Amino acid sequence: MNWPQIILAVLSGSGIFLIAQGSLFAGCILGLAAQPFWIRETYRARQWGMFALSLWYTFAWSNGLFVSLGR
Image (cartoon, rainbow, N blue to C red; front, side, top):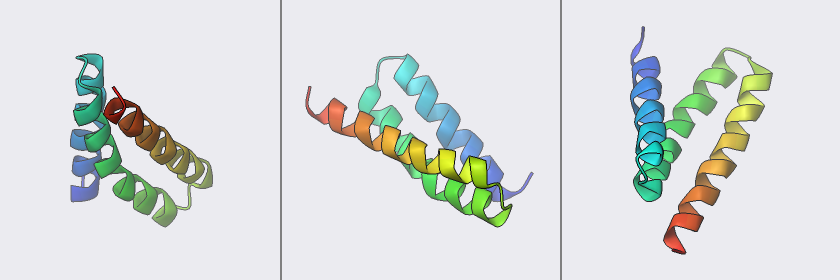
C-alpha cells in the first residue's frame, strides 16, 4: 500500500465515521480533504467511472459542508 492509499483510507474512513457519530461538519471536512487524492489516483489509473464518481462525491461532501454550516 502506498502513501496516497493510506491517506485515502484514513481521511475517507474517518469522515464517514464522524458523520455516523453525528459530526457532519468535521466529517465533511475530512471527506473533502480526501477528494484530491481520490481524483488524482483514479485519473492516474484511468478508472473513468471511479473518476466521475469522485467528482460526484466532491459535490456531495461540499453540499454536506454547506448544510452543516446552515444549522
